[in-house]
Image 1 (cartoon, rainbow, N blue to C red):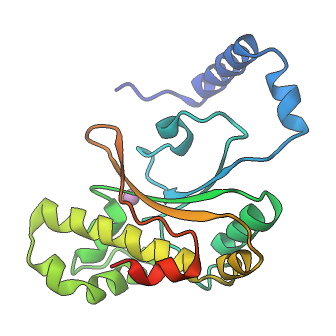
Image 2: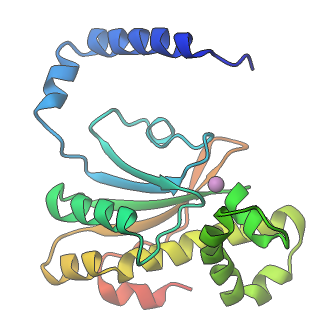
Length: 207
Ligand code: CO
């Protein structure tokens, strides 16, 4: 794959904007006055997992938060603010925590070596490992990493559900559901992990 230079990014952008206007006249004008996506995506920052493209959604349809290894930390003001804004102001109906197989962050967390500052962030993945180490240690290589990628999605779904934002939303009767999905870089396909939580009581039913 030839790497585009910065100038090409701008010409790509002009082409993209023109196509969007041609497909739907007034597209950008319409977006200026409305922001009401139904979905919040919490995914990995990995450049191979572009949220909107994977699910075929246009600007305005998907509110996105991405970080290394799609981690939801209860003290992460950035992620919590996104959650609160999405749930209480945008009133999204679905929150999708989407991991991906072969995640570099998850792989790094399983290694016994230093990667720098990022190791502090990866401690949260190591917590997931410690919790499920029996199941994970029964596997090796790619299977081990991929099992951890799945378990990480499950644990982050639980973390979303346990935030005050979701607890309050459910108390108020806001109809918001949290889903766990995982994406395959190898085939471009999403897999639903079937761990949807729509009320506080559902959380305890997850692994
Ligand atoms: Co990743």
